[in-house]
Image (cartoon, rainbow, N blue to C red):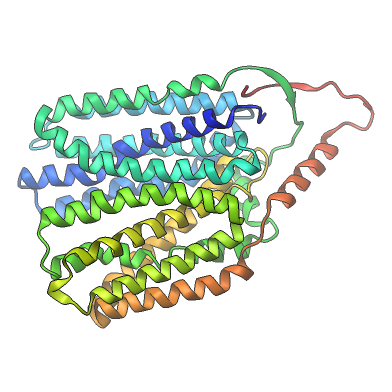
Length: 430
């Protein structure tokens, strides 16, 4: 299953995650800008954030995708199907006018996000299956980097391109890229190899089954805390710069292009450090680095209107710390997946980490009103140090346990009356 060349695996994953991240970033960040240019109310623009709901609820249909996919090739078909329909919906959106067809465009955008979430579930499951344990750190750096690069392109490059080619032509270009990004999937082909015999839990038991695994409670706590020392700073970074007197264009460059670029770079570094230092050590060091970035932000609060260039290293540290933490989350989430439930178990862990991040982001605004930016950034530094201390005890490597469970499951599924059972044939990668 894993004789797929590593370089091709990394190329494939980067391409797939870029394909989902660029359109999502465009719809989430550029469309609100265009709407404001069309004189839409801030309330209407705020409601647009509801199109992201499918990404929070994607764990609901993840078991169905797993249930219908016993081979890598079947996950590949899910990816292709989702991406093609994703591209079709993007093209369809281009035929409507934001100034007069807002409701229709929102409905289509929700459909687009459902399809991108479906692609994400299938891509995650495929990544779990094709990456050897030793390749997961670098493989997940491709996922994290794809997300940050996609945000950079979707929110920066495409906004500029919109001014040149217009709404409909831009969406045609976007749809074309989504389809083109499928090209590396040619490396996932039908090949007869031995398949593991396995029993699958009933569909309704798939999600509860994840939470019944040994060590799940610690993993949930770990995932809930991993972003706690970073998300508040990311959420309040732009308001802080507004209050410090920065222009809108300068904020867009520093927090958008500059910060996101360092996020992409941090993702690659995160994969390298996780591979070289081990997952436990890298998680702890990323937490400590996140605390240092909080201290950098605290330092800025003493300069008020005169922070000028000093904002750049602080923003670079916050974004790179966040991307390193993301790479670590993606990597460790691959450990705790059951055979046949790769998409479900991986998706559940990522959703848990994102939900906790949303809670922290919402709370950070209220806290900043009460204790100010300096107080908020100080609290973030404390949370980062606390996570650094707790992570040593919270993190447990479940790779070995998962492999032992798979071997045990295989033995249970071999019929005792057949000493030399005939192997099944699987469609998988070469």
